[in-house]
Image (cartoon, rainbow over all chains, first blue to last red; front, side, top):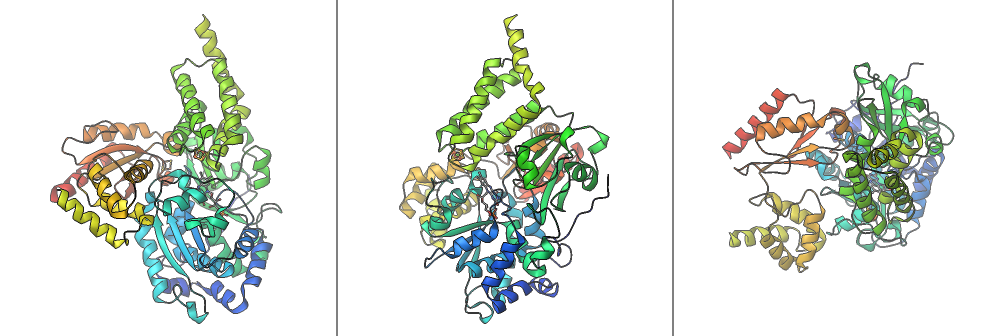
Length: 424
Length: 161
Ligand SMILES: Cc1cc2nc3c(=O)[nH]c(=O)nc-3n(C[C@H](O)[C@H](O)[C@H](O)COP(=O)(O)O)c2cc1C
Ligand code: SF4
Ligand code: FES
């Protein structure tokens, strides 16, 4: 295996400055991209983002340049930019590092995005589970106000931008744009039906741009170094770099910035130091609890949007959860199912009732009483959930189960085995 | 009691301009400052009145979010992660350690109302799995001995209060 290294494009300033001091951020070259924008105008910046090919890192992989232009064309007296730091997908902790180690770049990304799309108000929506970094974020916001990077007439540019932190209260679904807006309006966070879209009628029914923490950070680095530098990494269809969260049975779990195109093997056995205690790899789950299960025999699959798509999964949140052969796949899937069972907001029938059915089936598996018929029922439930659920939660929850059935059919033979035993 | 609650509620709601848009931070703050670390039925009723919204809306929000509670809890909430990575990394052992040390099962509160032991979904500390959150602090890489020390240190802090 060739030597693999992390890259530091988005994470360039990690450890290069005291993450809590605005002064040291400035000394490290911080806010130069904003100055570039204020001097050269937003069209140039939007073009740079278009050319970079940056795709949203929140999971949906929508082209960021296009997203910003669409939001620019929404006209309203009040418009909101919301940094999505809800990071609820199990196995994910890369936004945590961006907030902790380079919060000023996240804020700079928000200011740049707001100026480019003519939005006057911003909110950093941070999950409640990260309460221990809320103060750190609020202090950074405060420093930016003190030095007029936030507030009225930023650096004399004529542009104003108000920014604050909003704490979630412990709900996975609130990472979805509409659910997030509902929770910020003081309601239980359940998604709304589309259209209209969040960008048209989100928070307080006003145009709202919900954008991931990493996407915002990447925007700043792209302006700092130019789209061509970003495109030196990755593949034609997956340009640039990506922050991944590697956890589970590896020697060196952690957040790594990688160029798209490394293989899972290179990530697990190279960057993350190999399987813990030299145990045998079993599978990885890619992109969170709603992500695909990839067996160890396919770990030469490349980490790109296109390769994952061919394998029936997606990059998702950037999580890679690594399991060795001590973890039984069906036990693991039960944990995944429990998560969704708890987190389903209950608004739409396919997801609410589908989860209830799946739970019954997984309880039967655990008790050793599942039958072949339960297996067929599971396939039908998954099919209905995946195609008719209201939001991305129910739609993508089926991915781990479908990929597990696809790649580990032998594990599901137990249904028939149980039945045989039951008949005797 | 009622009067105190009325006062606290009014103070917090006033801080947010009595605007129901701010229901979530209002509830978080009132819960944090309430005996029992929860939103009681009485508190919910007062909040609804102050903000001019229905009680059922307050109740809906309180029961929807896992950081809010409609039932009394200990001052120290111990949350053991039972999501994907932590389940792979043997969180069951951690559960028994805390159960032993606190003398309660997951889902219960200690008789002195100091500690509540519950499960949580992923807290974004998968790199130190199995992870546990005690109030706002997160710990990983624990051993039986460290769990004992940790619980003792929180007990001591509570005793000082
Ligand atoms: C159930 C659910 C949970 C989500 N959770 C998150 C999250 O924690 N963080 C995030 O950035 N995006 C999350 N998303 C995706 C967002 O809805 C949205 O697409 C994203 O924040 C847009 O940012 P981007 O364009 O930078 O990717 C979630 C979506 C769904 C359906
Ligand atoms: S898919 Fe699930 S989480 Fe999404 S709206 Fe329906 S019930 Fe709620
Ligand atoms: S899975 Fe336990 S902290 Fe993430």
